[in-house]
Structure formats: C-alpha cells, structure tokens
Image (cartoon, rainbow, N blue to C red):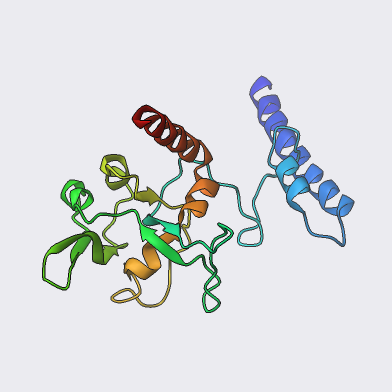
Length: 209
C-alpha cells in the first residue's frame, strides 16, 4: 500500500504543475509574455511547467556560451568620434581589423576549419591583415581554441546558434564579410571579457607613458 501511495504522490505533483501552468496562462490571457514575465517564469519564483515556447521564446545564453567564432574590428569613426554606419547593411563600417593574419588560430584549430590568406602590399610584400578569412561552420567544433590562443584578441566566440538552412556547401563557409563584427558587439555579448581586456590595455598604455 505504501508503494501505491508514493506513486500517487508523484502523479499529484505532476498534476499540480500542469494545473499551475494553465492558471498562469489564464492570468496572462490576451497578451504574450514580455521579457519581465518570461524571466520570472523561468526563475525559481516561477510555477507550472517550464517549457519554453521556442522560437517565440528563447532562453538567454550564458556569457561563456560559444558557437562559431567571429572577427572583431574597430569601427571607422566620424569627426565626432562616433562610429560610421553603412547605409546598405546598417552595420558599423570597418575601420581596422584586429586580425593580423598571423595564422595561430588556424594552426591550433583541432578540425582545421580555418583558412587565411594574408594581404599584400602593392610591392608584393605581406601585410599584417587578412585579405581572405574563411571558417567552415560544419567542421568547426566550437571549442574556442582559436579565441583562447589569439594574441591580439581579434577572434571571439559568437552566441548565434540558429545556423541551419537548406544549403551547406556555400552558405556554411563563412567569409571575412560574414565573420567580421564590431568591437561593440563583442562588448555586448562578452561584457566581462571585454572589461578585462580594456583594463589590461589601459594598464599597458599607462606603463608605456
């Protein structure tokens, strides 16, 4: 008899959760969960079934979450020091790529999914910047070794995980145009990392002075 009661208690707990879910749905009937309600529902204060209604609802990813790497660039600035916006793409215009095409990321990459072509001067001498940079996202194992070993903090791990489409042989090989994202984007998704790098950079500048 005790065994049967334990089973009923378990079913009671499940039924209570289901009931609380409908109570919450009726409470917010006629309006979708906004960010505040969504965070409350997913927190310890929430009740009911905690199913996320993806893709309408998405859980925020942790700061150290990593998917495909991206290249960090410093934006071009106007006379007031504000980033110039490309009207065609709506993105900040590239002022300077942090990447120097040193090739360390390519060398330490376990599945060898990174290809780099170094830029050349008009005289044919190598320049410290990439002319071409490719990552095959189907081969990339998202390990983060490239970002960890980059000596110039020019390659970071992205948070964008919705990468599926109906073609893989061209669209899944990201070039330098797709991979390049402004430093402000890096600061937004990796605030702790960015703050530490800025503090280290400021300390080095102060030491030089």
